[in-house]
Image (cartoon, rainbow, N blue to C red):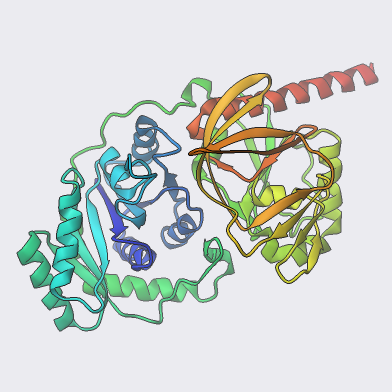
Length: 462
């Protein structure tokens, strides 16, 4: 089994491009690559899945405790797996000065994975060695197994940097990526553009794979990252409740407008016995029949506002279902869609589902970004959970709407989590493994409502 992390000295050093190339090249060698992403990002895992054909998993050490992270990681691996973890931001960038929780370095130690450090080699010679030495010495417990240099001008340029780095630091260079303007990862306000919206991605993956095979010593990477066996880890926290909700069917929004979900959230629902049914607010005329609850994740509904507005039948279908009491949990883009309208930066306004008496307005400025602590009450049970916010929009209420989330970030506090009927919708993205009681409480509520409806139906028929 192999486990390793590809981490950068900072953002924008080409981490995703290199990761994509290494994963693709290993897959071409028929290595059983299992992809992972450090932190809360939704888009990079989509690239991993596109490249490897396997679902990528987020490993977030701020939202989820160490032992659960180890469980989520190692339960996906077998003796022949090649686990490739893409880092986030710079190697040591985490939650703050007092702790390295949330950082790539911290995760590498939690799962015991060596790091291959990616640096941008443009305009440097011996300074590259100073950079690598600084990263290697900063935390001796973080195992930097090798260096990959991106944006190299020529073979001689690479050999110069390689000699400097290896002589001055003792850390081996395992290869490089040449400066290749043909491989470009375009972005927008929430990061990279999702896979479903990109043209020519397959060709870019093929180019990246060829570059990795030619210029990176993949055999050496596998040698340096080899481990003997899968270690013993704790059981999945949801194992104790496996199959408990096998009578529930939950529909989840899944299309180009709504694609931000943690794969382990779905895994938790499946483990609990829930039947998952996808639906598309863009393409479907109405909600699927026989649903007991809805899960509407985030995404880019603002980029598809016109198409969402045109699908009037679906907007009316989901609004009627929620007004009739169908339970619903919505995050970020899901919240935006449940308001009456979405107004773009240019003033263009699109009609949305209209369940909440409120309007969404896009903003140039980032409104919220980062990790948060959430206190809420579900089914009369106080629950604390951790989440993440990242949005360029605000929801303006037309009438007071009860809030269920009390949010804390450092010394700042605010409320969110619109609650109406059996619908809970807020900007925070929540990882169910942060506190399993949150998901269990939501499912208990859905099951309770289903039982009451069945009793009412029996009484009316009796």
